Image (cartoon, rainbow, N blue to C red; front, side, top):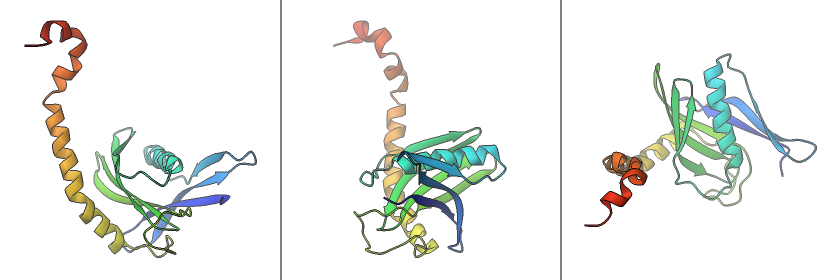
Length: 168
């Protein structure tokens, strides 16, 4: 296992900004170190994304994962996998507006779509294509969530009204 792996955020020019690392302690435990942006909300958000990345088992990628930090809410909605890089597509919203982000992790994974692709080889075009490809699936999940909201009150009251409302 690698002793240290890096986490980056991709920029529109395909450059990467290192936001943190996951490293092994002498006891073998994985720890997260986040680069300070001098903005506590952003640092906390990045740490939570890094925590998700640390737990990623390399298999499952269809679950929506929500992240909250002060007024900022984000959602990891898709994971792109290569052999030597994993991309996490994130939509982030705060009082400053919406950002579409890609966090890249340089941990070597062995179940992949491209044999030797490293984070250096992943570019903005790849990420943009990932967003375009996943958008219809994300919209379908949104539609299902809206349908679920129609039953929100009924779900919240199930324990209070079950006996009176059960059956015909």
